[in-house]
Image (cartoon, chains in turn purple, brown):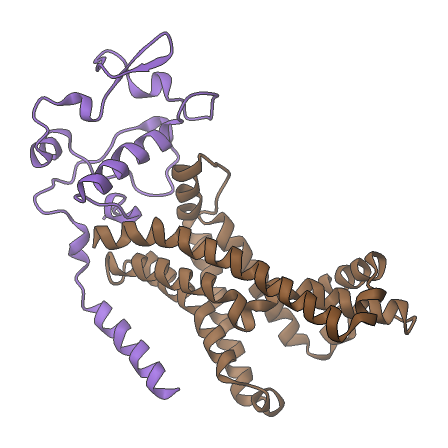
Length: 130
Length: 218
């Protein structure tokens, strides 16, 4: 049994040496998402700076990678710059509409998963504010 | 790291829950067939009234003689199980995972409260270890299975609190998910099987005491 405990302790000792910095994506500025509709926050707003993110992700003018529009309450792929996300994606659940927090989470995490780039863990985006 | 984490919260999580569901049904079914084969009279005496009466009375802290005999263990046991269930359901990241996957929303605990409950669970686990080592009677019946079960239960909580404190960066949440999945899969095969069997054990004893001995079993 002692051998088991020692190896478990060794694993934890090893883990302690892994720098927390791995959570900080290289070259990403410390701008944060600004979505006051979702307040009060249990976690600090996600680290996100629009232009540097898109440059790093190679999105150029491809707004539709994240944004979309709406016609008669139905999602259309064409981006409508005049239409804020929260106008359709309400904070509270509504039939046929993805609520705001889920929309953001799915938008970011799904893409990060598909591209296998960018953070996918809670605190990698919701870094505690210093 | 990302692909490993995505695999752990995705396919591996599905695998863990499916394995649990299948093996849990199998364990319950084989136990029922064994009881029918070797202890048919007990199956015949099973009664809803005496079963539920026993379960209800044992759910109340210090109601039964068993709970009164070891007051400290009773307190720790109740606190441990309540905190365990509350944390599994009401911790924010768990709800967010359910929300992202299935659109399920409900209120969750503030981070500080979740941390406090996690530390309480770890403290309870420490007490269980202390008791197994210091209490002669308990030590005599302690097998490797008991230590493995206790370790499997403690591991997700230790990794959860370390992750909450930011120790180990992205590795800790990954370890949390992996240890929790190990715990889920281990339920039917270790002492953790009491999660499946406890109610039936209570029902069995309650039915015997109520229907055969005509007395209380608490």
